[in-house]
Image (tube, rainbow, N blue to C red; front, side):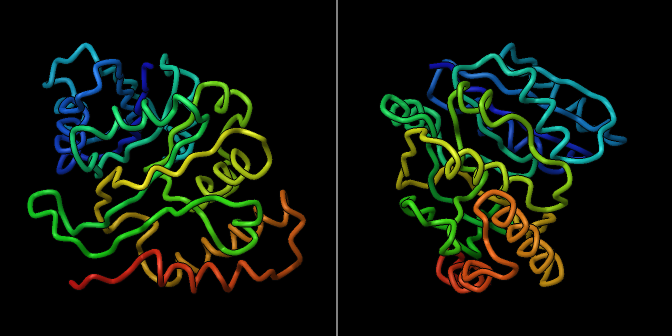
Length: 250
């Protein structure tokens, strides 16, 4: 199984080298990386090209943000399965893609766990997000998997379509909800760490962003799951976040 990894980048020269090294270091041989760069003004593209790898393709051009870049990647990937790795994140270890490919022998969607770290030099652990098993009413109970651990077969991507750009911070939540909760795809939780997520991005920028994200997630549930104006998941997501994102110290 060939796995495509889509990486959206913009002015990521400080971190993208770690991202690419973690991709090239994967033991799974059938892989490709698509770097979708939003016309960076720094050396991001030069760093990517310096690896001179036939497994990496670069596409540069202006976009409206990370979700538009992801949509572009979904039109360009060649693999049997696809997932996303942020330009400031890394795979947790060299066996991640091999384990995902093996898990997809009897699944259409595979997701795992995530570590949140301060940086990729020290890998100092701040928080840990365990995906947990999906069940029929999981989204109504505040559940959601970590997006950087989410991989899907090509048929899933073709069925679900694009990320909805009307969501500013939670188009990934909406996409995974549509993929998992609105279809009958075989979904498998892989109980292992998939990625190391560097803190400091848009999704970890404070309570204001968290509140807006929670409201956007509510809008997604209202659109697709017929949730009321305010549902239980709105509050349960905050409680669940306390368990999923266990503070391990600073």
